[in-house]
Amino acid sequence: MKKYIFIAILMIALMIFFSKGIDCSKSSISQEEIKIKLTNKFIDNDNHGDPVIVGINKDGQNEEYSIINWTYKSNLWNYLQIGDSVIKPSGTLTLRVKKEDGSYKDYEYQR
Image (cartoon, rainbow, N blue to C red; front, side, top):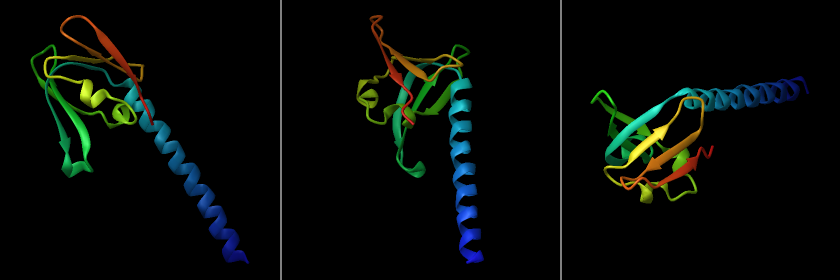
């Protein structure tokens, strides 16, 4: 009987620990800023098939981001085209894709 109580307590503790880990991840993503002009997009088969975008920032440096949390249940992947601007201000979970003609579409974090 003590064995089952111990296992139940351990399971509850693990559930609490891992649920807080997810919140921390969302918080860190919220604090990240993305401002790039898209130069490439690909599926990273080495990382479980995550959709990845590559672009040039304002300093001319290449930056690479996994956007799996925005593509889940959305058309973001198909909407993105080379030359689009991808913007996510720090403190938000909204990813904006701005086309060269000035039109844009916002995508919300899905996890």
